[in-house]
Image 1 (cartoon, one colour):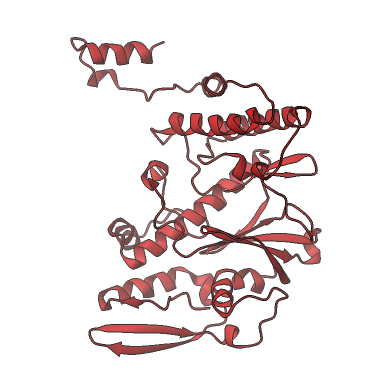
Image 2 (cartoon, rainbow, N blue to C red; image 1 turned 180 degrees about the vertical axis):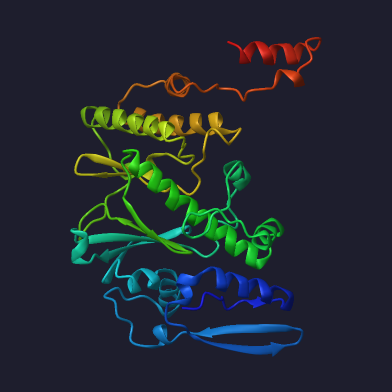
Length: 341
């Protein structure tokens, strides 16, 4: 299936588009649409007519024509690879992504899976994205580092091609993070496959109800305390895996049959590579405590964050090379004293 969008593109970006198409070999292996090129002034309008979309829509979920196109461009690769057999419903809709309930094939040994499909511009307007991208390598759809110099330059320039690659890099980063954390024992949906714009993973819930987020439910103190401890355990496991969630709150923790599941990892950071890691980590812990305080659990967010952070040998201030400090300057002396405590 061709990934070229229906937007107008400059003639000097056409080569970039061709490079992107070549890089995504898996997409080329799928059923290709017919590409129509029209000239309008100095610009070309490239339109893809997709025979899969124009043919009979094969799924139970009744999507609008626009959503059919968006869905099939995002997850038809999963369908071709038999990761799922049917789309049953949309279980979560939002400005960032939709999550779809899918019928799983018998070989997986479970009846249902979830497909998280990102909105096309989800990561283009992410506020303060530089805070999360610091130290992060640019990844392709399979979570592999992008080494192509032209692709790297396009991402730096934020051309149309570069923005597509950046979007794919965010998705690839979330998929890789989920793999690392799942292997590390963190309570999250098991990831199975990723594409340019979507991730297949375990579904939390049943065919009638998806697991609600913690912010949607009220717990008694007796119910809340063990869940709070389990969340803290997961935060520590993430630190062991050199990851900080970076957007953790009651909105990103599911509750189902007495257990919690962490979700949404595109902004996750490596604390060894990000100078803002401590601040971001402390914010995660604060948000978790804010919710559980409302459920009757006593907690000191700052003390908990410091204890967990330092238990892994990390400093709450970025380390400063002493060669850059002047002992005659009070501020530099204080920085060194704080670092050596």
